[in-house]
Length: 52
Image (cartoon, rainbow, N blue to C red; front, side, top):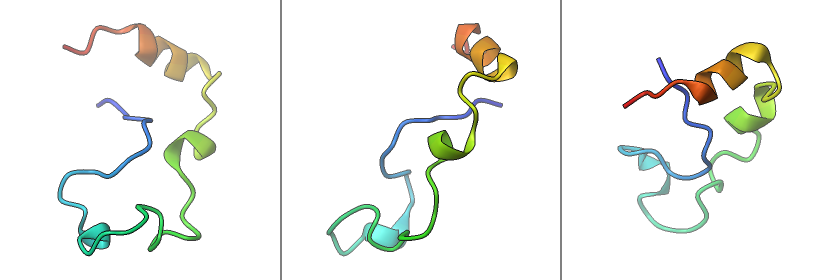
């Protein structure tokens, strides 16, 4: 399983169907890249794997 750490709108995300800021409905929801320790060994290993 791969984690996508890029900011943006996920497909099928209905939170912003009406337009506006993507984070408008997620005021208190932390982004994944703020939760995960990007220097952790497993995260770095995941960056080296060819997932395609």
